Image (cartoon, rainbow, N blue to C red; front, side, top):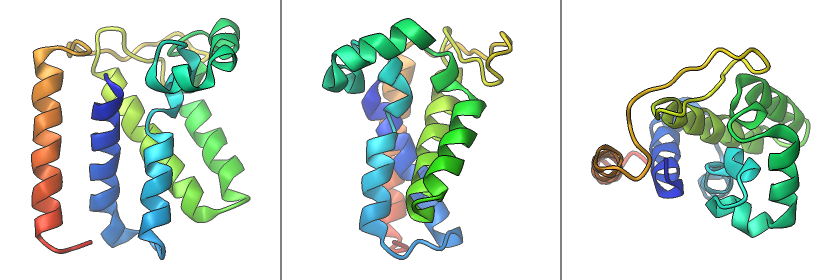
Length: 153
């Protein structure tokens, strides 16, 4: 999936979870959701985030491969635990952003290995950049607008 679909989905999930989470600073929360929404793609040099990190992204991709450890529950849980030592708010934003990223990438034909290092793959049929992804993105934006219009933020 493209970065903007990941971003829209993670923001929408964050909006729906605000009612159930002890988030005091919503601006900081959504700033970190934004920052983490594409983070699993740091292992791909030509991704939006990979281009920002240049050589580091190439090294990470060479060592870990694309859609392996950074697209796994192991990474999500480890990152959450590590970040929770510093800030519960940042850890929750990380968890939401990475979980939503994994869900969307699991819907693509390339899929993900959620239980990495086990080679079990979860995959779907939504082609990255295809018509179905574009329709999903538009649907996410509509839901985002509807959620915001209810005044529950």
